[in-house]
Length: 349
Image (tube, rainbow, N blue to C red; front, side, top):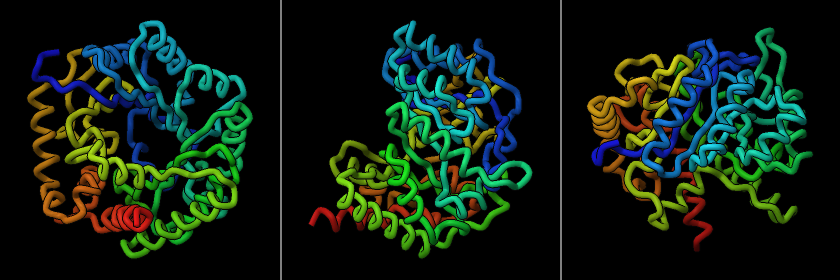
């Protein structure tokens, strides 16, 4: 690595594009269906580790547990080589077993599961190929993790289908008992995302406020707090622990998404778009391409800097904005972030 190269702070390995679910909004539905080889995974990890700095290593897909053996081997490689990686997995939880749950716990892998609300709402969005609901499978997996004493996070994709019931996601989090963090991810149009309608900005704001109020109520009842990813970001920005475009590492050229064949992109939502391809694991990241992509992303989102909320927002998500076709700010995301900023300011009084 030369002095001019930016160290990676986040590496996402898409171990396979295959999935045992057929979620109606899946942006990864068109990703490569092959399984990443251990050689490709090792090369990707070595690229991220070359500077010796700590980075996040996230296992993704598709459903990454369909490639558990590869993931297990790369986790062992990271530990054996003493690579300073913070390992995470984003999973639908349905393929978890007691053995896998115990392995992830012992390996100190952070676990995030996807859940879009109470069963009747979740099953309209997250289903099997035949249309059957997936809530039972998800809750079974979450229960196995709870039995192992593993705390988890939940990611909820917000669309017109569930935006009015976001408080239900909070209730499910408290029902499970081992959920410590909840993040809202607005619908993206990539992949199957264009099959659903995006949530209206006003309803996003209302839904997020209802979720925050519900969490506050249950925290008072149970004595256990639920953290919100978007609210945590506001708190960090307020303390000046984050600066500039702080929404994600891709906005600053500090992230790499590697698909199963080993191609490197700036973001998972931009896979297949050659404008955002940074290189491959054999030759590494092309620094000219990286700089061009950073410039394109930040210039495209320059309007964020003119917003009075920017210092507590950190900027919008480029890939979501890019997929929406909007010429200006993506209003639904602004509504989500403004709801969190207003909540933070209210709690500070």
